[in-house]
Structures are given as C-alpha cells and as structure tokens.
Length: 203
Image 1 (cartoon, rainbow, N blue to C red):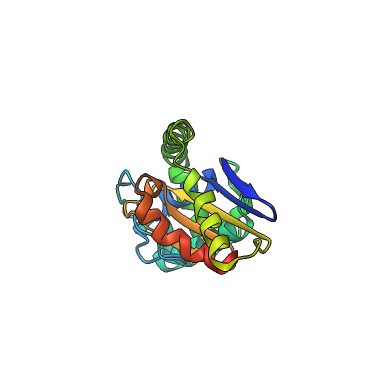
Image 2: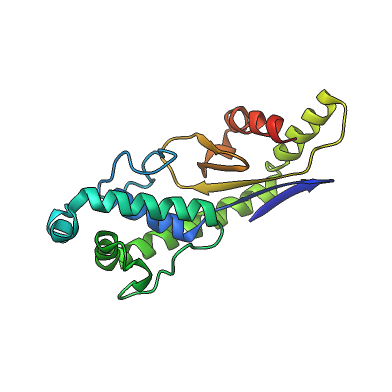
C-alpha cells in the first residue's frame, strides 16, 4: 500500500484480493455489463466458460449476475474488508446467493491462483514506484490545488483501489473512492487527468 498525505488530507493506493477474485469470476462467467462502475475486462484476459448447466436450477445467468453485482457493491462499500468470508469448500457466507456460490465452488482454486499472481505483480509495481518516486505526483496535485485556491486543504481521505484492468483509465465513486487500472500511474499525464478533478472536489 502507498500512502501520501499532509495536514488534514490522505491519499492511499492499494489493490484488493477479494476484488481480484470477484473480477476473475465476473469474466470467467461472461458477466459483461455487470457491476457499478462498469469496469473493463481484467488483464491478463480470463477465459470465459459456459455456466448455464451450473446455475440453471438456481436462477441461471440472470441470478448469477444479480448476485455478483450485490457482492461487488458490498466489496466496494466495505473496502478494504472482504464483505463476505471466502471460506472454501462450501462458501457458507454465500448461502443466499446460490448461483454465485456454485461458481465460487467451481472456480475458487483458479481464481485464487490468478489473484495471487496479480498481487505479486502489484507488489513489484509498487516497489518500482517507490524506487523512482512516481507517486510524488499525488503530493504535487494537492499542492497545486492549494496554491490555486490560496488556503489550506479541507480534510479528505481519498482511497484509490488499483486493479489489473485492460483499459488504462479510472472510475470515481462518490464521495472519496476511485477504482483504476494498476498501470495508469505509469502514464502520469493520463493519471493526472483522472485524479486531479477529484482532488479539486475534495481539497
């Protein structure tokens, strides 16, 4: 996790294991258009599998999408807590989401392996950032804003959740959360174009 801060303000950047597993399951189940915000596909690409046979007697793909979206909404709201316990093999916490529970049971091993690889990659990216100082752009954006308005910062705490997404962009979730591609910071101008407007709202 990276943290930047000053008097009254803090910006944190990190990833999320449960969200990575949720992304994998979304893509393996082919739930295009699921969730708010509508995120791009995961990278590297997750191969889609047909789940109609697995979910047909518990509401089918429509139920799976609804259950996944409810889980995703909880993950975003409770971040960095996992919302529901991911406890194989039965995944009892998902008892009220039988379609999602079955997909978890079928794919948890591969989802966990995929998520672990992404967390390892993220740790390397973080180490490189700390070594070359690119996260300094966060302080620069806040300082630029405060110089512009001629006052000290309002108190704010901005949480940036980085995920391996194939589209280099970010999504702002009011009041103080952003989800973004984990490679966006490697393009400082693009990164700034997404984060600066949010800093201007909060600071």
